[in-house]
Structure formats: structure tokens, C-alpha cells
Image (tube, rainbow, N blue to C red; front, top):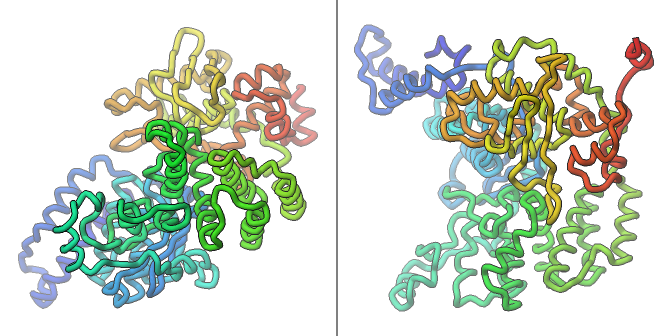
Length: 598
């Protein structure tokens, strides 16, 4: 097992426990290697797992750069974590017994909870977590160690990562630079930490129907912030805009562990996943609307928009509650006070504009109050833009020919690994369709229609620009006989043939390149495209995967494609969108332009 580690990911996860058993027995037999050792039940189980795992095991020669960046920290009060990739955070408080544990153990627990809360929907990715505790870092990177408690914690998180094909790496960050996670680990909301006397609760159970307590019968708010809303939702507790605001905000359950997890990332489209929108639901129901009607109205926020709004709407709820402000009909002065507070925290124009939109959107829904269009708010945003402008990420774009020439230099599809084939096909889709990574990720097998001359892709799910009467047009990409290696139709046909042998009942077009060959996430597709861009010589530190859309449409414009054709292909309803955000000068030297005419 040890000898196989250079070619097998997660190998230490299997042999570390066996090494511990060996060391324990050697100590018992005073170092005599000629003694027979009987494996424990755990050791036998590991051997069986190893036998099942080994045939599909592999390990990359060069590990890809992390696609998810996390930070975690712990204090004697609790633990905190931050996902800097998507600007989400989580925090929790230790119970009394945990507070007595060594700080090294608490640091490792905080890291585990951060990973499980903020990377819950991640798979097929490299996750990097930064910590200021070198012992906890060592236990993660070495798959365990001598401490029984910390070894078990490290092993648990690695099994969790393995099941999701996540490679985890831990790195050090000085404590003075780990400010956000440290702050979250020390913030304690006393209102959320309470427990009924168990004896009195039993008396209540006997006297009243237990249905009054729909989610818990322990009489305790739980050791988690997530559990604090249970009593606030009981019928005998009055619910108003402000009375139980904190419980509404933190009602989302994200963990069954005994420590809390409050993650902005868990805020999503549905009310169950976005506790911060529960108050909106209650306000709509107070207007006399039925549950079904309210549910339909709440779906008016797209999932991505709800995630963006969730974080800032939660902050607004806390702000308005602490200052006794009417959440859905505040004065302009109070809104500006809140936005200024965000500004003083270092947020830029884009983030504060999102916060303003979250407030305006909900106030407009409940009280027909369009805060975003009030003159004083508009003036504030203009001033903010002057101080902290949100300028375009880049004013020029890379040349698609660099990537296409690199793809053309690659071996034929029949000689590629499944990973290389997946990278090639997703990149061709991005460049030849002008679509977002989200759209490519949503493609299903039933969306593809390949005929003799072309492939037609009709996206059957809603995308960002979908609205009543407008949906992304079918992608029509013709065969390219001039260079078969650049032909998306040929590549698609071969990809379907190869994956048909392993995909089983999976209906999504793009699947993982290792077992169990399930549908990949958008971040996986993004990572595939980014890797091929990097190999092609594109500066991926400067240009992200979304730049493919600008590179593709800009190249089409330079080559004389009509504007309406570009707009149709990319799914834009306004030429202004292309002109402002996507039509960039292609990065070429003077000599390149001269030589291109030869």
C-alpha cells in the first residue's frame, strides 16, 4: 500500500490505520517482527475497501491548482470559516465539553465544519483550506497522525472528500491575516444559545400535543445556530417582523453535528434552503396569499440571484432588527446608513449595489417601494462608483486562434484520455457557441441532435437570460471538414460513444472522468476549460473561463459576422450588452497582424 502511494490518490487513508495497528502490536511484542498479527475488524474492513478501490485508482502527475479557497479558525468560543471563492461564511459554537478540548483539536474541527458547510455541493475539485494552526494542517496533509482523536477527525474528513472526489490541501496563513475566520469564531449571539429545563419540558409534553414542536422534542435549541428557530416557529410564540428575526435568519439546518454551521452558501432558491427569505414568505402570507401562491412568487428569484441576495439580505435583516427599523418600508436615511456601513467594511461598488438591489427587490414586493430608484439612493451609488469604481476586468481579450491552434496540435480523439477529451469538447462548445459555462453545464443527452451536417443543441433548462418570451436559441454548429480535430460534431460523436459504456442512466451530457461517472458540476467544467486555456498559453491568472464568451463573440465581430447573428448565438436581447461588456480588442501584436495576411 505504501509503495503504491506515488500512483494512488488517497492511499494513506487506507494504510495509516494499518500502520497504527502494526505499531501497537510491535510495542506489545517488544519489537519482534517474527510475531503473527491478527487484524482487527477495522483493519479487515480497510483491506476490503482497498481491494474495491484499487482497480479504479489513479493519481495526477501534476496536481491542478485549487478551484475552491477556504479559510478556517477556532477560538475557545467556537469556530468560523470563509469561502473566498464565492464570498460565503459559516460559524458555530462549541458546547461546554468541547470548550475543554485542546485548541489543536478545535482547530481541526473548525476546518472540518468549514469544508462540510462551504464545500457541500463541490465534487471533482481541488479544495485548499488556509489555517493558522500548523498541527491541524499536518494532520490534514498527512491523513492523520498519532493523536487518536485528531487522527479520527482527519480520517473522517478525508473519507468525506474521497466520496466526492475532492483533493484537499491545507496551507498556513499567519493568524494576523486570518481575520475574517477569526472574527466569526469569536462572535457569540447569546440569544441563540438557550435550553429549556428538561424536567419542565417533559411536563409540557404531557400537557400539550407534541405537534407544537414539529422538528425537535428535546426542549433544546440545539448546539447549533441552525436549530435556534425551533421554538420561534412554535404556534404559541408570537411572530412579527422583528420579534423573532434572528431565529428566522438562522433557521437553515446545514449540519447534524453538535457544532453550528451558518452558511450563506446554503441560501438558495427555496425557502427551506434560504432561511433568510422566510420572513418574506411570512409577509406574503400575511397579505392573505395561499401557500401555493407564495411558493410561486418566491420562484421569481432565480437560484443564482437568490444566492447573491441571500448574504446581503441577511445582513440587512440583522441591521434593521438591531435598530428597530421596518425591514420592508425603511426610510431612505436608514438604507443609506446600512449601505455606508458596508462601505466602511471595505465592500466595493458591485457588492453594495447587490445589497441595494436585495433591499429594493423585497421592499418593492411587499410594499411597492422601489428604493433603488429614489434620487438620494441613486446619487449615493453614483458617488460610490466615483470613490470605488467597478471597472471592467479587462479592456482587451485573448485571441481564440491560440486555443484553436493548440487543440489542432493535440492527438486524435481516439488517442485521448477521457479527461483530455472532456477538456477539448467543453472548450470547443464554449468557443463555437459563445455561451456561458452555465449553459454548457446544463446540456442533457436529449438536448443534442446530431445529423449528417451539424449538431443542434436545444437547452431545455432555464439559463440566466431566460425570461417570459425569451430563451436561449438552439446552438447550431456545423461540421468542420477543413480540420477534423476542430470539428465539434466529430468530437461530440466520439465523446458520446466513449461515455455510453460507463454513464449508465446519467442523462447529463458531461460526466466525471472517474468512477462513479456521474454528472459534473459547473465548477468542474470551468476547471477543464481553464486547464486547456492554460496549456494553450492563455494567462489564466488574468483571464477567467467566462472570458471565453468575450473572446468568441469579439472574434466573430472582427471576422465580419453580423451583429444580430452574434446576439442570437450568445442569447442577448440588447446590442448594448455586447458593446459594453463583451466586444473587446483582440490581443495581437503588430507583427501578428501583418503575418496574418500572408
